[in-house]
Length: 232
Image (cartoon, rainbow, N blue to C red; front, side):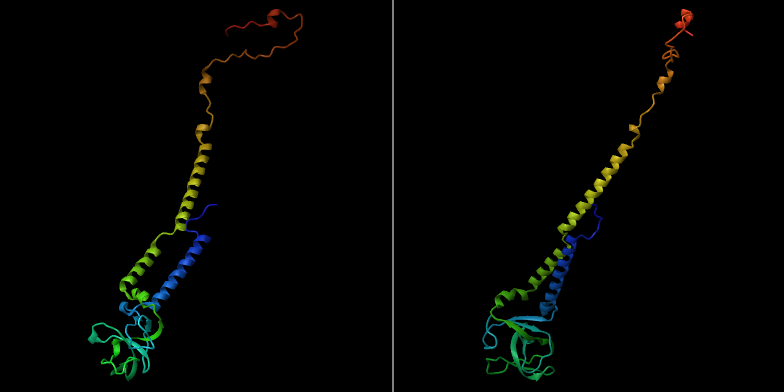
């Protein structure tokens, strides 16, 4: 059976479906976990300290998402005065226009900062206890950049099934060419017999093979019975 170039085989179809599922899952994960440092809407914060106990403990991973904040929510904010440091505390008052009043669950006084606008990175949605050290690498732009490069490499790297199909199609084409060459060899003019015209130049003896009667009457002379042969 000859395979047409570009034909979709069951093996290749399975590979395509698996690739689509892989890239879909990667896209969903990227959408949900893409950090705000790279323009996303997810902030992963590793708790350090005791200000939010018993809600959060040191080493807990808090996942915050972009959302409208209100009094009572735990938010992650980044005050300009701290040069990029993050604080995860609870809103106890204020508003989004004039600034929120923040305080840790284990603190007796409010924070000296009143975040508003872009200083609020997200509202806490869930947390994973004691996995902060493992998740610390996920917040690094270098790690995300590596993931992107790996995904691009997997996308453009040729798959083995494509190579196998190319070899199969090439072998089929070679076999067809060989068969055509064999057919040409069968009908080659070299195999057709050629008459030797030189035979016409040789003298022909008209008496050779002349039929002689097997019964001759007794009164027929001997010269007639066996005519002499000679030059004509």
